[in-house]
Image (cartoon, rainbow, N blue to C red; front, side, top):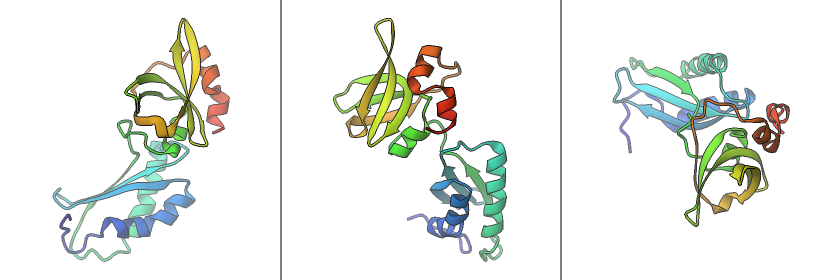
Length: 178
């Protein structure tokens, strides 16, 4: 158990204070870390939603979180507040992570040890569509989430080609969240 200086809220207290406000904005709190070892101590709130966090949204959520946390009596303790997204290195572990990653390139390790690299398509009912290379073209491989041991988003600066995009669901459909 992490020791906290008197006055710093616990992660559960932070979640209790911020959860409803973040939900109204369309985001859920994935994690809260209260780190008293930093100088000043830091409260880090990791939020995620179906619409990716941009700088403007992070700024607005930070302002709202700061106002709510200011209501907590921390005494003379000052702290730094950070609001961020989970980042690309977070493993995809829940159906919502796969759904939110639609269109992203991922590396998937299956329970049988096979490793696939492809682009995430639709996710529903415990199944994800993964657009993978097959022969000289592209195909959709449907994979049960329960068959996935590990999945991580790959950094990819190139946009998908037209064939991949069609199989993923098309840009307009992805942006609509379908």
